[in-house]
Length: 267
Length: 188
Image (cartoon, rainbow over all chains, first blue to last red; front, side, top):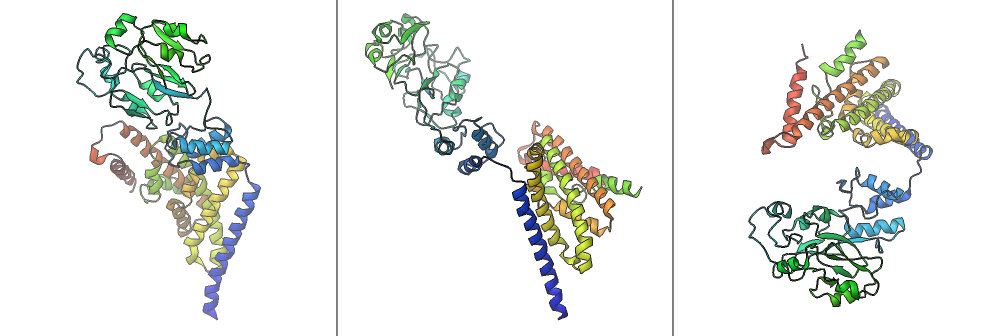
């Protein structure tokens, strides 16, 4: 009998303790319950959970809270890409697919190796930002894409790849409009364009027509044909370069037909 | 005088991290930035003092009268875990700002051996309640001191040219070792 008591005593006291603590915690959970946005937990669920901080918040939980409050965009997680953005958008009840305000990065240069002339052979650090320090890079056109792939490397979404013709190719489906490539490009040859736009002046040159023709076969020579042919008056010549006003443009494509150098393209 | 000795003894002579080697995990884990190490230190101080009082009462009122002293470890772990959980809930409701500052560290402390260590040491030394509180507070301050010191050194190390073989954890361990060496100089 003696040893039975010795066994029961600790078992019983531990059980009682555990039950008491459990009860207190259960009671505390009710009493101290903080009204939390249920969406926060749902968003945390769909986030990658790496707490990497790439979104600019302290971690996935902090980001989820900011999203629920409406402070952070639903597509703010660069790691989760579109898939996570879509799921968060579903939780938040908004659409991740955006209309005209949604900007996509576009390369406004067609000066590939075969159509754009070079003024030297560049042997240096394989980065546009380094190349531009040496007489503005190897392209004759001072505004053209150097094609060394700085934008490819800074893109956190793998949306940019290097094409065979020496120009980067931007996948609009993967682009989130984060502006990183635009900011990194020393030539300013990547521009943010509304997703709905179907026509693009794919040239960045502000040189006069004659200089453009000497440097590149597909540059905008500022002839003004597109301005005249546009039925909506959406195109203007600004500093020797045709500029399309996306608010007026109806994507009719008349300018694409009219452009003698094919500098305006249909996307 | 006795209390004074216990307090400073816990901070310097018997520094929890550097002389007793308790709580090494947060010591290395949360010592990358001074800011976070201070937060961790505060959370530890809070939980340590509270847990010591709780465990002391439990030992005196339940375990000793029932002759269940051998259940110390498991009961203390249970108490500390429940306590930390309770404190977290309480803080979230009453002071969200404090919860934001200490919240992330609290779960880390739940199973920290420094907390369990202080609870058991208080019993081993047969301290009374006041001595227990003073001892825990001193130990927590000592822990914070060691943590902040290492964090300060590691922040400097970050911008230094550490040999590849030592970069990261190895240099932190060496630093901690030298730091411990300095603290062991207090022993008479």
